[in-house]
Image (cartoon, rainbow, N blue to C red; front, side):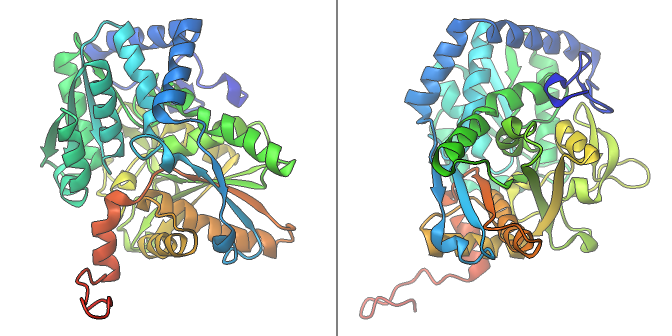
Length: 413
């Protein structure tokens, strides 16, 4: 079945996807799908969303040619799609505004969300403030500690932040608790999922609200360079930013699609979140997809320096793209991501989110590889999905940055 026809009527991407949920949620998922289909056919909905994306988010986001950074990429030219410049600092706001409008159309007054790095939580809290919705965000306790700045932002925006202390206290556990909340409150609550994960229709809805990234980028690259890029690259946890920048390029089979997963301390160590590279087919959070799991089918603990990629599953469309060979997925270690974080910061004055730094690191390797394979002056488009302000504390610790200045020389002490 061609990509444009997926998911099918049952919410599947071939064998992946589906709707593995308690009976209590079936009606809510059906209501959401009907609201989405009706909204897509309503010009007034599209007009309101387009106005919000332009006047509130600041779209279109620019494409920046990273000239000094590209000198390290083996002759490739690296282009950055600047989702870090959106209001709230990441691509997450694109989907959140669309789902907030759907929440209002469904007559619901409360939203809940899960978040890892806090980018989706901040975007959800922002939209809730804008639309006057009650908001609760579930976040693993470990993630609240490594992303304290975003916890403060959410609370200042009026959201309630629940630090989840079960399991590994990360994104998987936050999603578990959000699901439990939704089962108990579905009459007045919309679960505003932030990734292309979860039961149908969420993977489809989030992809379509994030498609604006590739629609803009494809036109911007064609207008500036007169051709399509040789490759498109993005980091992949659940995979929303990656599908956002892949979507309009999927039919362009001459364009390579590359997803870079969290390789953590190395796939061989077992401490990673490289779900496609090292996982097996299973069911997690209402979908069939690649999952990190043990021999008994129990979900394994994942690891990444990046809270946003620290998830043992992946969106089902990515599983399908990997299985069909249309997209390639590779792990990037914590060290490789942090090296790229520093290199982009020092060569371009652009500090990426650590999530996005995985894509930046992958583009460096990809540029060198394409050149070695004989591709002349490869053009690589990278989705810079978020900015790194939230990750400064992690970077200080990783690089042992001395934050105490010498008053006489200005040097670090």
